Length: 143
Image (tube, rainbow, N blue to C red; front, side, top):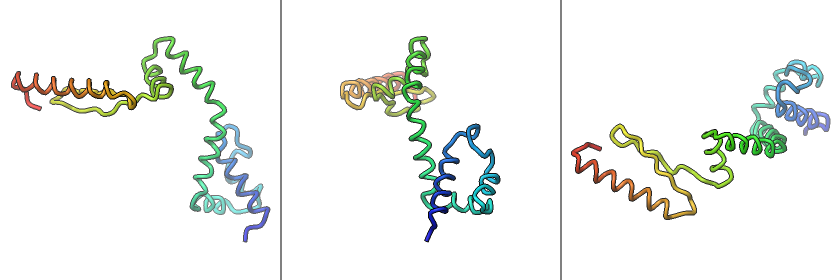
């Protein structure tokens, strides 16, 4: 059975791993092992245990969420400046938009775009695919 000290040290190690490297104290895993009074291999074994690194990721994400409003504001500023990547991210995040799929058609790439909550756009994409296929057939093109 784990001692309270061991449980505390394991949680401290998770917290240390979830922190950006520049904010970690001490700076190295070896120094942390020394601080705990354990061998460095002990910390490595803890990381290999089932669920340990999952806990680290959950903690890191929880800490990162406090920055989300700032990220969204920076994204909004990118959209205002005309940044196309920012626009796409904005649509994906705010409007829950998604690219359904990308189909390669005889060297051409057709991107079918649809909003999951809007069947009319999906219908338009399907009609465009049919029209393209008809055009290719009429022109004697393969694919």
